[in-house]
Length: 443
Image 1 (cartoon, rainbow, N blue to C red):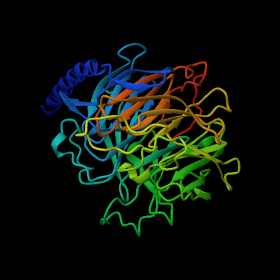
Image 2 (tube, rainbow, N blue to C red):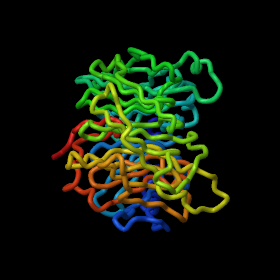
Image 3 (cartoon, helix red, strand yellow):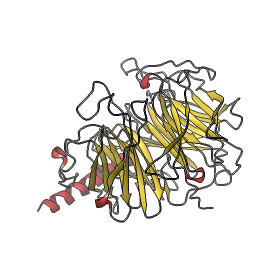
């Protein structure tokens, strides 16, 4: 009987989501460049009239996976209008549900004690993660009915994570750091590490923590991007960015440390596809507040570029900031900083062309050409003005740019930009986890 009730709930939810998603792509006021247009904006629906706060994204074929603080949204990517259709919602609330895909599993980061008790029908009656923090493993063999199959508890939870493929298994770098006052499992003096999970792709039930590399003197890391072609990782660790040798994925070795007094919070990284440069995003003031300078030469909350031709001796090459202030908005809406948040590097066919798609929170989407890192320039942008945007991430995937919105609950938006089509960039074959820069291209 429980299974019948659960199936009925899923079916009813699918109907509600389909109706809501079809109604979600409405035109809105915006400031934008002439070479970019928004094709769709679809809220992440938990049910009728209930929208979720978005976080990170991952892609597999024509499936887009959108994390949120209330659970995970699954969307079908369509070649024509409406361009995006929500299939289901996995309602297991937790902070912040950053997502990646390996095989037919979604890996989700849980950075607050989670509770499954209210959502048993959707959380599959699993209680092994109740009150815990760490990594949730969700089987998406049927994206209409995702189900949790494993939970791995990690020290200090998992704010974000990064996959490191290694043949028949995948390692998961679990990034975490103390938030606020010390807790029993997350003390700023004793944490100072990442957790490394060994994940057997064919048997996730055997996944376990196999090492906890020390990242002292930092309290932890916020995000890590890997570039397997050079066996490198760029680890944004709050007060500095470290470049690691990951030939032995379970035991990364530090090659160099980047300390820049102009960067307030080392938040995320990305490699150019030739492996020559590393971009570092500054989440100024933790995005709680910050300057909306409207000046591409302002260093506060900027995107910084380092030459890592020699990864043991990185050198500063330049930086970029969004040349706009935050979007106009109703004064009843809360203030959101204009700061570099989560970004992606487009796999351009020209190996010397470097293009980043950047989520600048309340300043919207900015597309940056940093082929000359000393003189980067914006080549496209889109900023919604009738609602205050809060863009969490911005990724190019197979001809389109996708963003996810946090506090304004605007959902997943889809954009098309001139000069970023199949003739300009490699299309991915299979899975895109943006922090895993593998050349799994279809052409």
